[in-house]
Every structure is written in C-alpha cells, then in structure tokens.
Image (cartoon, rainbow, N blue to C red; front, side):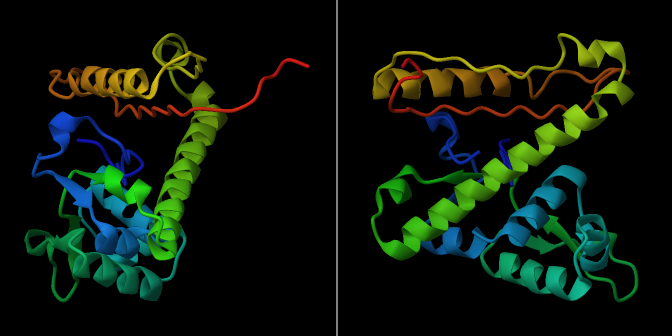
Length: 209
C-alpha cells in the first residue's frame, strides 16, 4: 500500500483506497501528530524495513535513542505505530508500523485554520524532502547497480499537460491504479524493492520570454 512518502508511504491516493483498513486516513488531530520530520522518518523506516527498537532506529537515522524513543511514543499515541512483542528480547521494546500506508484527507487541504494549514504544509514538505533524498541517493550510487537497472528499469521523467481539475484527478487515479496492479506480482531472483514517486500539480506562468 502507499507509504507516507508514499509512503511515510503519498498524501493523495485513489478513491478505491479510501476505505482500505491498511491505509491510515489522516484527520486534523493525527495530521498534527505526524507532521514532524523525525516522526515521518521513523514511520517510513518501520514501514520499509520492518520492526525495530528505538536504539536501532537511532543508529540508522543518526539520532539519539532518547529522541527516537520519545517520538515513537508520540506516534503510538496517535495510532501510527504499536508494540511488536513477538520481536522482543529481554527488556527491549520493539515497534512496528500499525498501517501499510497513509492518506491525507483532501478536506484538510481546504481547511484554512492556521494550525491545520501549517501541519499540512509541514507534512507535504517533508514528503517532498524524502523524495528528493531518495532520488539523490539513487543517482549517487546508480553505477553500483547492474546495467539492467541503470537502463530502462529506472526513470526520471516529467511532462507538461493541459488539463482540467477533473482530468488531472482522473490521471492521478489511473496512475495509482496501474502502480498498485503490480503489488501482487510474483517475486523472482532478480526482484528488488522499487520506489515509485508521482507528482502532479498546476503551475502559473510561462517559460517563454
């Protein structure tokens, strides 16, 4: 399912996923609880790499275990993560993501209250930052991958279209449906985890002089 960055996980997912129990739909309260850079990185790490302790996540993210422990408890208070006792060893507390993905309720983007607008902006900017970091990481080490992955199996494209809001919404839905149709593809020896980013937005002005 979509992550927040996705995946922490994409904010906007097809209508068919709106009632999927594996997708956490953000309301105003939970949005404010998630809209913090470290919390989003923690949630993303748990979704991508599986259960972990606060100490393990601190080492992976370059943070202190005190900070990761505090923000994990805040994520738990808002229902994003939960205990993973099946992984526990001794007194270590293991955490896991409570949902496979997160969706931002579109009504929140129409909420003009300063608190909600600020939280929504922080949430979406952090997703953009994560996408940029992931892309830069790929570009930096792409030559360590086999030629098959450096060729047509990876992509960095952009397009300019003339669309109405309804047409843009339809395009987004159809792109998401196509991506989701590959989720149950049977794995093989050359299967790797592939990150797919989609961005669609209107712009003003022209590049012409």
